[in-house]
Image: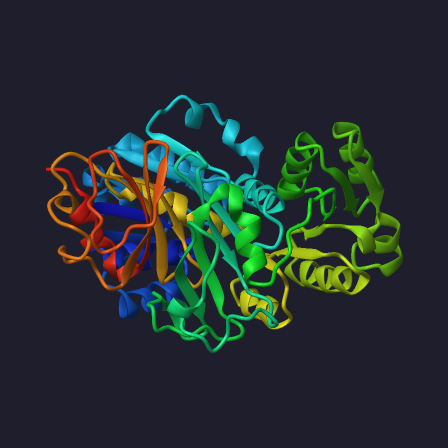
Length: 443
């Protein structure tokens, strides 16, 4: 598949690194000469220095024969114009990253069914709301129409799970550990694998027993009643509205009297305080000491990090901090921010799903970008229908976490046989995804 990417920022590079492994024909358009040179050296793709809105440049490099274009630069106007230009020249489908929801109302974007707008800030708000439904988890992703959930969580240091082989540990019924993320990379666990303090676990199981799983790794789940949000920008505003809809009490801290009054008028159900979230007195006034979640959602990475640290010190049970520069992720991990969130990276899984065949129902990137969680629907005549799991050449770099068949959930063993229509949740290292697609592909 021939794919164009406009913008070699954090999102563009992550998308490119995954698609190169799958053998796609990639062209990246980027203005920064150094980034272009680095990409040419590090990846098997064509990196072009230039403006993604330039029709001559796009046509010269074959946009008219391309299947997809992803406009994911940091500039909404560039993304919108480049996608409109590419569609006019002949690209089959354009996907455009839009930070400001008002920019997404462009009539040229709305009227073209071949342009798909993505709003990362809205995706971030939805992600955080999902976490409040499963307190204790760092990420929660539902599969199979909500029957199953994938949880990302770091176990308590006091949990009785360390130094023991996984096959010796008995967890809640219906749950399987699908992946372990460590500083050295992501690991597909086996029966002899031993957990280490600091491991980040990915487990799949029934949604209704998520609290039991978290309890088994030393994390207690409590109902979320109060959330404090620092910043009423695109993320903070969307998050406040969603939480209020869920009957959660919301307090918003917003700098600037005019902006605070404006947001209070738009969202009267929220308590809006004018002030700075890095002020301890302001945090006390907002009730951070009793807050279930504190979300630092401004555009300033330093401010978000400092506010989250102060909120934790003040007593917030879970702290969430947005970051926009990739170097802040490791810093946030080092100071143990509970949930670091990148609006830009939030769209990577959504974008990658558009590249894959119809058998893939959903796809999500795992922290570090070297693994993915994929939900496959088994079509007629797929290779996985021919043999049991033990008999087929299932990649060792992947594991089937669960299978949904009608109203039933299965944790498949070696003697399990797939049936047409089954939905399989698979945790896989990125390198094994092409092989999995062949196994689950209809003929």
